[in-house]
Length: 126
Image (cartoon, rainbow, N blue to C red; front, side, top):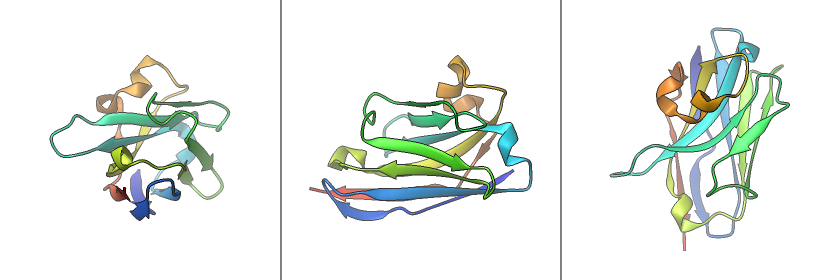
């Protein structure tokens, strides 16, 4: 499956952005989807994941209650709505797809994902 992330940009602290990740080439609903982020010199960080039918989602502690993941299987797209953004949210955000039946322990680890998008840069100014 090919993934194309978009929606990044420059935003002031406290602002909002919505990232999108469009999938093509395979059955989107067969994949658990995830968002990860990375800044230079740091390890890739788990941000959020959503189950195949969208019924279950989970978040990293640093974004819980501020970010919301969703998906539209009719549009083969997963979204990440980000609000109350902080300068420490600045990173390249990547969407990823994992061929899996459900969210499990391995879903939180990027190395277990099968496909990755190219990343979209989010910059939050103070």
